[in-house]
Image (cartoon, rainbow, N blue to C red):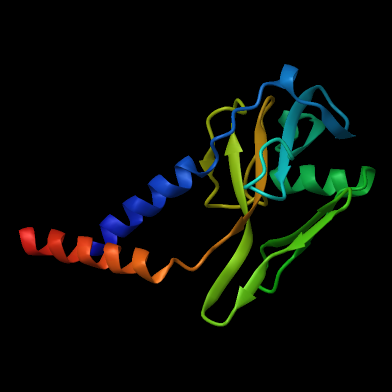
Amino acid sequence: MKFKSLVSLAVVLVTVAVSNAYVLEDITISQWAGNGNDTAYVVVDFDLSVSGDEYFFGYKFDAAQNVKGIDMLDALVNETTFEYGYDQWGMIGRIAYDDQDISSQWVTGGIQSYWAYYSSTDGKTWAYSGSGASDRILADGDWDTWEYTVFSTPEPLTVAFLGLGGFFLRKRK
């Protein structure tokens, strides 16, 4: 039961993490890559605490060829000044563009920060991607976003309140 509750909470937190809704008319595409009749977009956010600092990229492709999210990133690397790299776990752990160059940070006991990957079919409703860019097949109009996510250690008082809340919830049963 505890595990199901924790998983449910994690899903809710992950689902609401991307709150930005993007409309093509309101954004400026930094660079384009690829060729084809279909279009997908990538949003890169180096700092979630700053609104409006995202970079937007466009990608042209043919959806009939089962192009994946990683193919879009590779085209950006080959045709623009965008860069990415992998961390020691085989996940995308570094993204660089313009004057930004940020890598995931791993510390003893876990991860301190990482590049979170989300997908959308309309740029407005986002879902955390559990599979990764290598498994995501793109369709015309799809959006991907990469957000640099920093985990912070909760303050001791916050931990105490959470512990008390859990104690009282358990006591009620």
